[in-house]
Length: 193
Image (cartoon, rainbow, N blue to C red; front, side):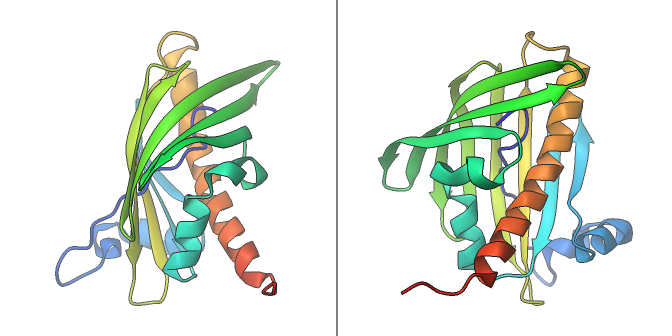
């Protein structure tokens, strides 16, 4: 995932309300309109999107590691290297074009699935300094799923930090939108026997 195509999930549901009630009115309106909302700076981000779909459909897309390159922007390849129960190790190669430069990154990520609530992930190796976060999935009373990624990202010294942070933040929003679109696309397909 070139600086941000890898989305982690996070958003707890407080008692007496939903994860949405903790957001500003503007953020709630943007989510209801189908937009991704990404906040944070300097390598610490929270990205959210609402997906009108059943939980299992969203979870399947979030954990379809071998097919990320088919629907996540900037991902040119992704493959599972190891599986041990709910622990998955996968390799993801991302490519981002900025002005006249093309930046390629190779990441090996360890993910720990805790169905149906969250997926913790962490960089195992790669050409960035660090990546760690969580995807969280909340089922809302409106029959929608709130997908949240909380992530900390450090590009190291290979790319100017300000540029890397801007690329990652933008890529996180684009990846969240792509996850929603892929979930909707799969739901619209007729069932195959």
